[in-house]
Amino acid sequence: MNPFDLTGRLAVVTGAKRGIGFALAEALAAAGADVIGVSATLEREGSAVARVVESHGRSFQSYAVDFGDREAVTTLGGELAERAPDILVNNAGTIARMPAAQHPLDWWDRVLEVNLTSHFVLTQLVARPMLERGSGKIVFTASLLSYQGGINVPGYTASKSAVAGLTKALANEWASRGVNVNAIAPGYIATDNTRALQDDPERSRAILERIPAGRWGRATDLCGAVVFLASSASDYVDGVTIPVDGGWLGR
Image (cartoon, rainbow, N blue to C red; front, side):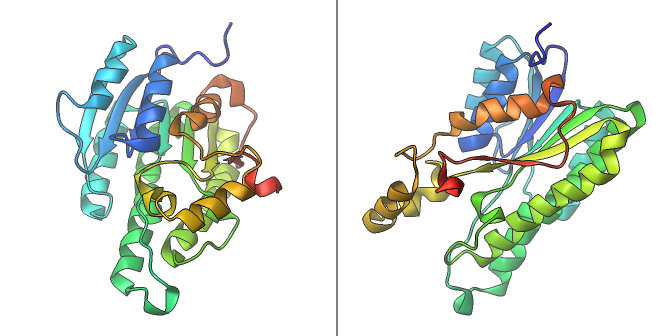
């Protein structure tokens, strides 16, 4: 038997339209899962992520939900709970760059809502049928800034530090009930969220000099860790955050 086989399982991936979420949706489909994708502007039909999931012979359903809208996230959670998915990948997120002394409070509020509170709201609802049946996999997307402070991103750092703590808190409650809760911590991945850093020659050079692997990460670099955490191969793994960072934290 292949412990990484996800055939017959239903996975929810938030932030699935592009970047890391897109790559994770494809990886889960390649491992055998049907996928429900959620993003703020995800097309109802014919999206790129739908096509790539379906190319692996799996079904895809889309939801367009703004994770800054708590009412909409609550409604989504109720609808998804009725589908009783086997896997929930909490990947939707945002970032706002501004020095802390000038950081607008409305930016802070939105980042915390999108990156933290919405994930708790959704997870609370989707986990209920998992707990009732005694099985489920929940994977959060944390960050290197779950461990470090970062520069000019106080809301993002606060939210991602909290995600790492929430991962542990939920695992403490739910591991004995058959639901594994874990997280990944992406390093410097070449996505739209890091475009400003990639385009800054000095910052990009400083980042690359710190990464033992010698390159920016790709969204696909995260797929193996997430398939592992979504599969029965990780049945005795609870409350951990796995860095996927090219060695950054070990430097």
